Image (tube, rainbow, N blue to C red; front, side):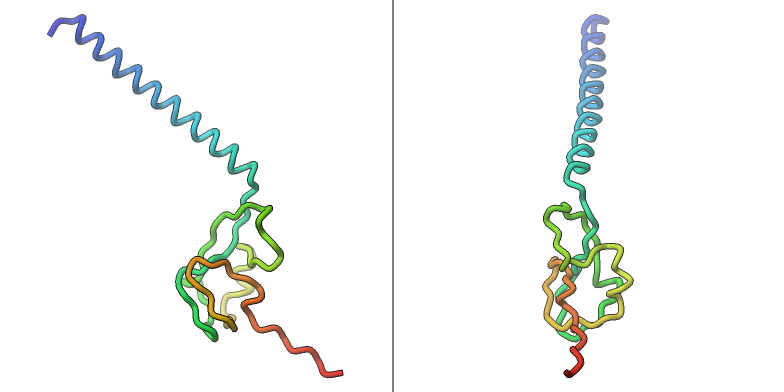
Length: 112
């Protein structure tokens, strides 16, 4: 193989490697910018179906990022994980569904 052909091959390889690296860096920067714009908040989801009366453990819960504009006060957020561990749900909750504060028993109101 002539040195000229070998040089072209090496040059193409180095060029493709550089273009791939540049593309990867730019894609990561863009995705970081998009994630920052969404303002992801950690929300708790269930890892499996949970029947009524089930006491929640750390195995039952997983956190995922949800855009801030889609969250309501009914969602249990990541920092509230300790508050719900050891509590029993009063309604069935499906796998992958968000954990809501309405899934727990509400203390009864005192009689008038």
